[in-house]
Image (cartoon, rainbow, N blue to C red; front, top):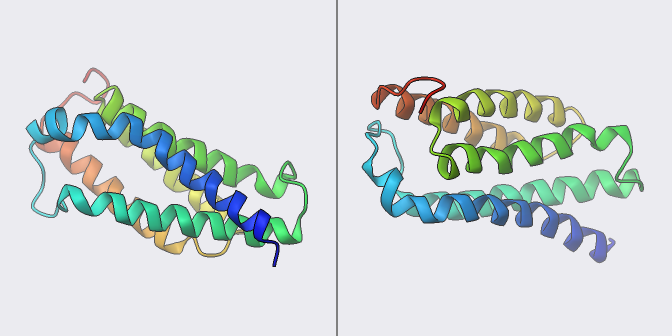
Length: 152
C-alpha cells in the first residue's frame, strides 16, 4: 500500500469538498433557511458528515485506480476529474449564486458524469445514490419556490 498516494487522493477529494463548502456554509443560515423545502429534506447537520464520507470514498476510489494507472493525466481519469469539478461547481451555483434552476441542470450533468466515472472507479455507488437524492431535492426546492428555471 502506498500511503502517500492514498492520503493525497483523499486530500484532493476532501479539498474539493471544502472549496464547495465555502459557497455553501454562509448561505445555510440565511438564504437557504428562507426557502420552502419538501417533507423529505434532511436536517442541515446531516450534509457535512455525508459529504465527508462520500469524498473519502471518492478518494479511496481514486487511490485504487491510481495504483493501477500511475499517471493521473491518463484518459481513464478524465471523467473522475470532470465529475469532481462539477460537484464543486454545484455548490457555487446553488448556494453561492442562489440559482437552484441552473443548479438543477448542472446536477443532472453531474449525475451523468458520475455514471460515466463509475465504469472505472469502484466505491462510487453511494455517491451516485446521494446525488440522485440531491437531484430530486434540488428539483423539489426549485419547484416549491416557484422559481424561474433560469432567472433565479
